[in-house]
Image (cartoon, rainbow, N blue to C red):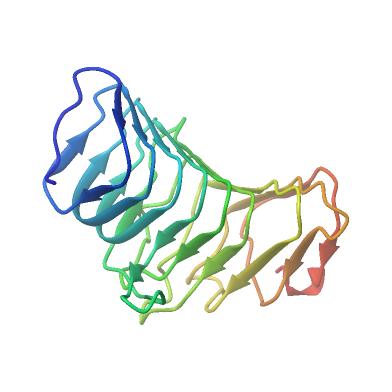
Length: 212
């Protein structure tokens, strides 16, 4: 389908395939009972709430959170799903530049965008309960968070963080909060650069030497 403007709260039974246009939540709640597959267009959350009961897979287009909320029960993948079930890169953009913007991912957050996100991730919070993965798809700034933007790792089971390209001036975390409650905690498989404050409210951190 192409985008539309909500005039009230709306529930989509099953999957939603957004191929283009402008989907404006207009302050309302949009609940997708299945997967949300975005292959084009813009999702403008504004001050509304987007609830995805399975996965959000963004192979193209823009997700603009503004001061709204996105709640995802499964994975949020800025990737393209292939017919064989594997994933490859995406031409998608994620934009978080306003205070109050909030994304909660109960599964994994994976970005493999081919585009720089320098200046697009400057405010708001991404809370992840699964793994946090940045893949280099030819652009080493595809998860470059800055200024007031914060990542919260709040899983109840073990979590893994892996960045392909994380040094100053590339894909970095601006502010990091670790509140994982599991015995296994959070493991940093690769070097991850945090440019601002790190707040640990409990939980185990493995391979902390990889956090810079």
